[in-house]
Image: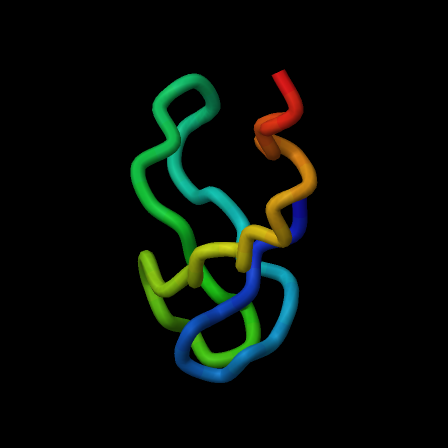
Length: 52
């Protein structure tokens, strides 16, 4: 999954911190911390079948 920055709308958000203790995310483009935006759900993954 690729995270997108909510401030600059660029790809590349990455987890930062010591290995095994990742504490926050950071955008390498604008330097924002914990600024990832939620992916838009297209409904395909958890779609329930209503034909039961």
